[in-house]
Length: 307
Picture 1 (cartoon, one colour):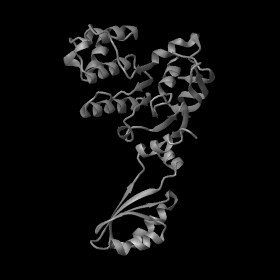
Picture 2 (tube, helix red, strand yellow):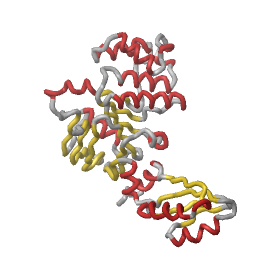
Picture 3 (cartoon, one colour):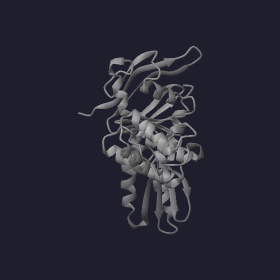
Picture 4 (tube, helix red, strand yellow):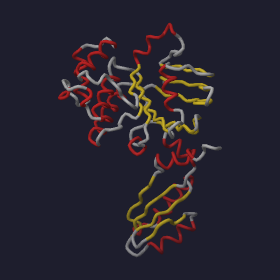
């Protein structure tokens, strides 16, 4: 039976001046990477604060690693949570080694483990440099090392790749993949949707304080109801001959030249369309299925803000 590391049921957090989140329901299975996406002010940061127990819900209930954040008697479970905020801020005059040692002591980690983590995030050469000399990317990597202290079972990451160059971003996701293999649950907020698409197990889309979609990318594609796109490569000069039969199969031609056609059809027509293309034999040289991207899905659900 799959356990859920995070469960939110009808959670709302209202302030006198505004409603931060309203009637939020979602769960994150153990070992899953859930991407939490939405516009600025959508309620993502508030949800992270609720999960961390930094603020209490106005209504609704939360279960985090099997505990209620409001229960002071089970406060110790928070040691199993690692958190990387969007804007990392440490003491400017301390060195990387001093900072990681300080946070290691709070998590009752050994000095060797703290140095191991600094090496993991690529900061071994900067251990004796003061934090104020670190670049934005180095600060993010130090923040990640801090979040990994104590071997957390749940990681909350807010814009974790901000300031990282492409190589460092790839290294970051290599680390994340290893953590997931060990069963660590990850909730990750990011505006860089293109890089999330290949990494995430599931996506929750926030809009004006509410969850407007949640599930795997395939679930979201089904919910969005967008047409399926196919790019077809044919024998030279045969596109016009093939185009009309495709239109007779309820396909819409969106682009055509001497060698290529791009068509759209309803997702429910995918297998019928592929069978028809297969019947064309050698006239068709290649078929590329172009799935709806996370960027496109987000655009669909963000349009629901006022609905």
